[in-house]
Amino acid sequence: MILAHFLLTVNEANAFLLGCRETKEALLVDAGEYPEGLDAVLESEGLRLTGVFITHDHFDHTDGLRDVLERHPAPVYAYQAETGGCEAQVVRQGGIVKVGRWAGTVLETPGHTPDGISLAFPGVVFSGDALFAGSIGGTASASLARSLVNSIEEQLFTLPPETEIYTGHGPATTVAIEKAHNPFFK
Image (cartoon, rainbow, N blue to C red; front, top):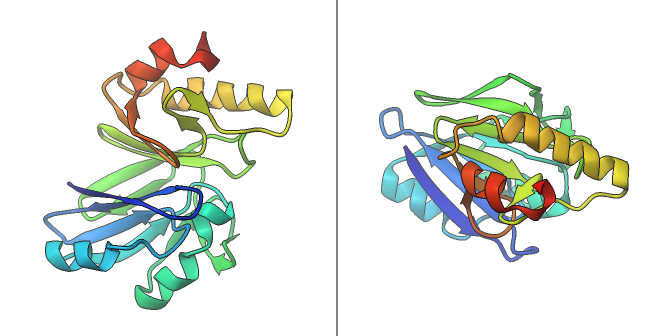
């Protein structure tokens, strides 16, 4: 598996490129802007972009989607049929998103937004703004915060402890670290 990280200038959001070494297919996770260095990674690894996964429809995760699709036409996978002003294939809980020989499972993680979804592959999960290292995504009410905490506990904390969590902002972490040290789960 090829994994590349892009730190975007818009709200210091993260975008990730996941690639299959065998098939040379690649998936971009979130597109707050056109990631600087994306073309260089695609070229150096001989990859072609075959999909874009959107964790939630906030500008810092979708504003670059049109630019990405203009240069690399590919299906978009999201919770809703339209995201960032672009048409998307709807994916929901338990849905599968393939990247070459890798199959990722969609996990619904609402709370930060109603359309929040994460994508889990063996050993890694892309959590968007649901879960951060030492924190959780912002919510508009106490009931939404409870909903987010519940979805994290039910969807992300049930993954193996060594699972690496790649977040929408900030550094990566693991399920074990967040279960043991994240103050929202004490």
